[in-house]
Length: 317
Length: 212
Image 1 (spheres, chains in turn orange, purple):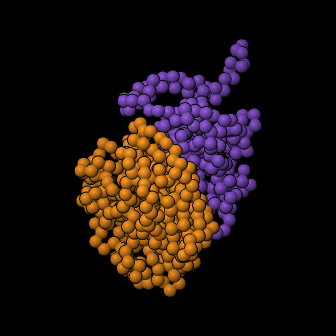
Image 2 (spheres, chains in turn red, cyan):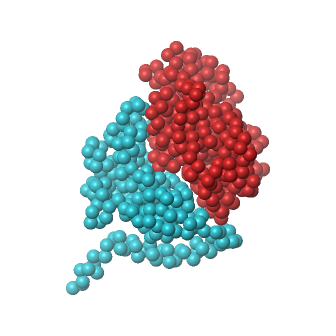
Image 3 (cartoon, chains in turn orange, red):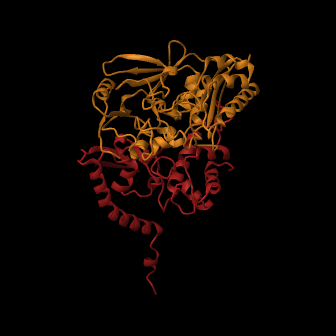
């Protein structure tokens, strides 16, 4: 691990100002992904700002009838919150399908959104990776790509976003609330939060330097059946090959987002509109223009089959 | 005839001697590699927390993980370093009663926290019920993952008691029960190379008063 200086933040304003002005400064909350990457020197911050003392650890009702989740609420606390379990079941299910009990106890809501790809070439500093070292190339293209993206990728990067939570937040139309060093706040729809790789795969999100996530807000509950189905190589504690988050109403309408297939949680309006027509119609719209590799072409039919399982589970409920 | 007390050198004693030897050999190497990486000394960070009921005050290189603080600075070597990347669970400890991977958190992030390691759960004279159950059900073979397994197991039963749902809970809003399926799912962050899983499940079931 490279050396860094460390401070415990006492005010969000100061923390954001410092993160924006000190070259190489980073916030640390749960630390489960950042420290993992620092140990192999994929991440090399020069200064860490420990934000754990700043609060932001409550789940509150909003005036609009939704829920505001503090940025530092742990993944366990969020999954176990009775309002989330009752009204936003897809989010509880997604959280509980991710990581291990130990990691969920430490990982935070904001940190989960900001976790970096698990592409093996991103982790291996001996390999080319445009996300880790811009301009160095992509060893994943033509390499071991079983886990990687089938859609929305570029000739610079075929990484996937690893979060389960973010897929559920995408289907729920969450918004991300932030504050910057000047005290300016803004809200970012989850759809615009993560980026596609394009020519700049090293930039994962649309956050500005020093911008600090304070909360994630969910709109009013949607009702319907909430399902999160995750297909993976082990029954527990593995990243998704494909995951489907869906909210399905009694009349068969609803919405769906897919994980494990792209650089961000994947949701397409036309696929939502095709919900009553069944898995084939939904999948063909979700994955129109997919460019799978030889090793991950199985994900395309797997999305359709997982959708079929999700729809029959919702009907049976 | 040999003095029986010499023969009764415990496994714990052997491990302690072994660990001290290993530290003695590796410490200068570690220091050298740290200097080579940084080229400069890093200001240390003071941190105070309670470990197994005892107040500790340390001044640490900010890079020191909670795991390394426990093992190398406080010499509580019960907590084990397996993968050092949060994948194996050997480093599991309880912070504020909640289980975490001590390898994936900095000691400096735990100012004022209350930490319990395997040494704080029970002692050889007075085992924690989970430790006793692991012994009774042979919930280990080589024993390396065992401290993490036991800390995790204790926390799992508490999570179920507190009503935290899991991936295998059939209904999200029902109170979870300590079934075999629930305990196995919740223990997936603790890997056992010897494959003592079924015996670990038996031990947990006994403590939970349930069937594995």
